Length: 138
Picture 1 (spheres, one colour):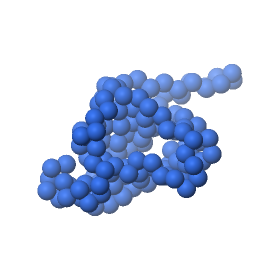
Picture 2: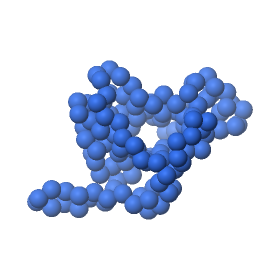
Picture 3: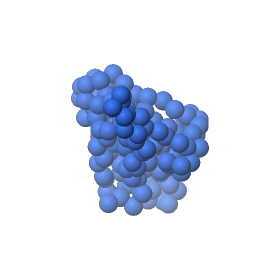
């Protein structure tokens, strides 16, 4: 298992014959205040998303519809998480490389971030990521 503490978190699920309801509450379901929310959808077959790490931003990812995989990499080992239920989310702390792939048709990935969009927080080159990890700067 990756020493990153990336983990699946089960969300509140309220079942009802008319349809179920799930809840996400910041600082309760995951350990950060939400500063950014976005969603990924209409991903063409065979395409990957992500392919970067964050220096400071933390994320919480939910498959609102369909399924996909999130591959989390700490620079030494990788772990694959399958998200396919809207009442489970993946907490990904800062300092980890992440990729998303195997999107099913009509899947929607909802993502919450601990920071506003900041291009300087992204590490988009895997070799740079590995160097920062090796040097203890990440």
